[in-house]
Amino acid sequence: MRPRAVLASGLALLLLVGGCGDGTATGRRDADPGPVASAPLPAEPSPAVTPRPTRGVDPRRPVRPLPPRLPAGLYRSTGVRTVALTFDDGPDPVWTPKVLDRLRAARVTATFCVVGTQVRRHPDLVRRIVREGHQLCNHSWHHDLDLARRPAVEIRRDLVRTNAAIRAAVPGAKVPFYRQPGGRWTREVVTVARQLGMRSLHWNVDPRDWGKPTAVTIAKRVRAAARPGSVVLLHDGGGNRAATLAACPHLITDLKRRYGVARLR
Image 1 (cartoon, rainbow, N blue to C red):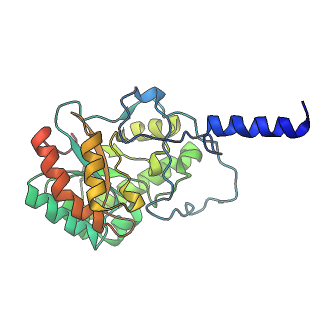
Image 2 (image 1 turned 180 degrees about the vertical axis):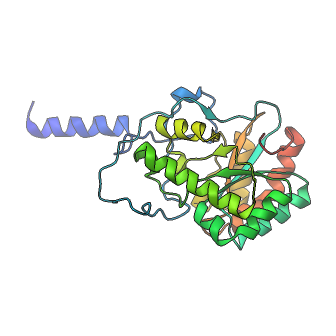
Image 3 (image 1 turned 180 degrees about the horizontal axis):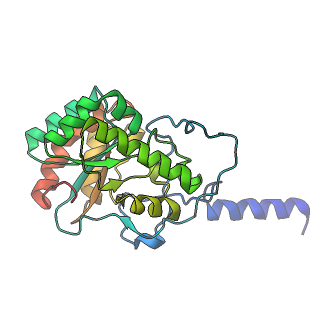
């Protein structure tokens, strides 16, 4: 075969196979009914919070490649009929209070996956989250998308630092969950979180509100993907969350009617 023909064949094969340069799978669904251990690793096209290197870490140092599949041991279902709402990347001084107002009006509770740097800036919002009966989840110190690829000692330092900030805001606060930035899990992250007494919280409904769709689109995506026991990924921080806020009354009403809504336990 001539060289030009070989090149054309190779390009055609690449188009058929697809995938990303870091080995992660593409074409993620909003709801993945398959087993956790065989689920493709998700990849957000842009982080909700701009990642910065951990203090004392050389960002130029090579990091481990991500696995092509999600590891076992992730918490992706409530285990009962009720659905759980989770909000990432706060607390945000503009959007978190408004989300809390919506939840209070709807008489439902949720789980807030908080970023350590935001907790340090807005401890009063963490106190309000707890005071109004919502659940807390560690979402790393500053949403470093490469955190899972770093040594276990650095992963542990990041998670411990975030828990310390949470408990500085709310002494004795329970933090039963950890959520990895971008859903970029590795076995090492799951292990470290477990050692610190936290379950690794993923999701199985992602309306991709981080991509700034309309409120109508967010609500429709949640409705289409939700099933009994679903864990819904939403955002209250990391940018303008007006569409998510506007979608909340509609999607909450629908989920309450079909399955019920309760915070994770």
